Amino acid sequence: MKLLSVNVSLPKEITHNGKNVTTGIFKEPVDGRVMLRTLNLDGDGQADLIGHGGIYRAVYVYTFENYGYWENELGRTDFTYGQFGENLTVKGMLDDTVRVGDVFRVGGALVEVSQPRVPCFKLAIKMGIEGFEHALLSSNRTGFYFRVLKEGDVGAGDHFEQVEADRERMTVAEVNDLLYFDLGNLEGTRNALRIKALSPGWRGSFEERLAKADASGQAQEGFRTLVVDRKVPESDAITSFYLVPEDGKPLAPFLPGQFLPMRLDIPGQPRPLTRTYSLSDSANPECYRLSIKREPPPKDRPDLPPGLSSNYFHDRIEVGSKIRTKSPRGKFFLDAKGEGPVALVSAGVGLTPMISMLNAIVEARSGRPTWFIHGARNGRELAMSDHVRRLAAENDNVNGHFRFSRPGPEDVAGRDYDSTGRVDGDLLSQTLPSNDVDVYFCGPTPFMKSLFNDLLAWGVSEDRIHYEFFGPASALKEGDEPKAAGGGNVESATDLKVTFARSGVTANWNPSFGTLLDMAEGLGLSPDYSCRSGICSTCMCQLVEGQVDYVEEPVSEPDPGHVLICCSRPKGDLVIDV
Image (tube, rainbow, N blue to C red; front, side):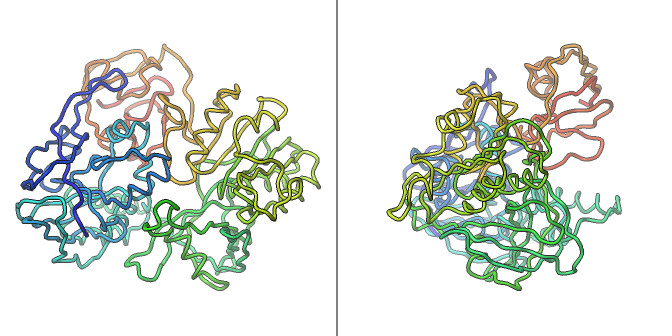
């Protein structure tokens, strides 16, 4: 474990979306040795002392191994040390290996891991990608903060020596997952509260969760045990796993396109990992199917570890293996009984929710004109094409098209694939009868970005473009907010009245505000906020009267009778306690 770079900056004011924002996120590497003090590094500062800074967030740490991950996901090679706003760029300190409460000696300082990072909108400004804070959070590669136990000088080239390990041994990734995604895991919440080093902010969030659970008396949804009934290779990299209920009772239904949350007990990992995989078949009360791609290290970064959970499935899960799951969920799904033409478009393992949608359309006997368009490198990496071609042959409303970017010598045009190149707007405009179509698509991020903008350029209405990210989410269209799958829309009305009760201010809603927080600031109010993206709940306030729509679904649901104003807007006249 090594310190690669020390990065600092003092707060400065920038203009973003027409507003002045003060931030210290633009860290730059410094030469020589720097004193690491109780609150920060010499020459460094934090602008927002509510969301950043303090003794439990003295310095932010990010491991260099994550740089390769993001380069691969975003298709970028322009990263420099401090890219993610970190004070210390390190090597060998991954989120799923470093534990909250671990104590290290580095240079002349003694430091303790205190909490994961809570990403905010300023990271998106730094990266130049709207919504990137959600991508970082979803990836569970957030990085972490150090509390300084002993001040001392540090510099690039220093090595980290672990001198103490917390007995709870919960990794940064596990604690992050517990707060934002594994909300019903009360046992894990209690374990986290036993970490003596955990920062007061995170401790308070976990304590509040337990208090609400005790007060409500509501049973938390438990995990259900499913058993692997079959394991079927679909291609060189993709294998399908058929799961049946251990108790023999019917499985929960799901909508085509939704995913299955699960907890995996992987040997060598101190705690179970929470993962989600798209269901690759239509709903069946007797069996779920998951089709999982083995994820290797990025080709340009073979030093990075392969996908932990996907390789565990391929190498260790066999017929008879047991897996703990929750009910299927997700906001990206198709109404199989819908009308009008639909295109199901994918690349790579992004085809799994599309297969579920296609099967549901066929089983519903809707007759809906359907095009299944998929891109793969070659026949060795192509999965389930025989199934799609069979459905197309048996159903007049179903059409299939497979495109290879690099056909192999054994691949035959017209038999194994229909065209050469990448799946893009040109292919869709040549294959579909018109742009009057609902498009659902899923695949790697570069594919998503390119296709989204191609569809807009072709004239496909944005409200008919539906997508789910394979991997972390990032903005698809420059200068615009990504439309969350399943998100609601608010009519452009100017007669809606919004009352900020505590401030005694009432004004008409104007959609140009974007969110209730934007409106409050435009009226000269200063409500608390931090992430500005529905992550941290800092902006949560009481909903006195009325209802809201969420511009983007919050990661953590607000308390009953409350609203997150940073990502919501009114559905009608509204009164909130601000």
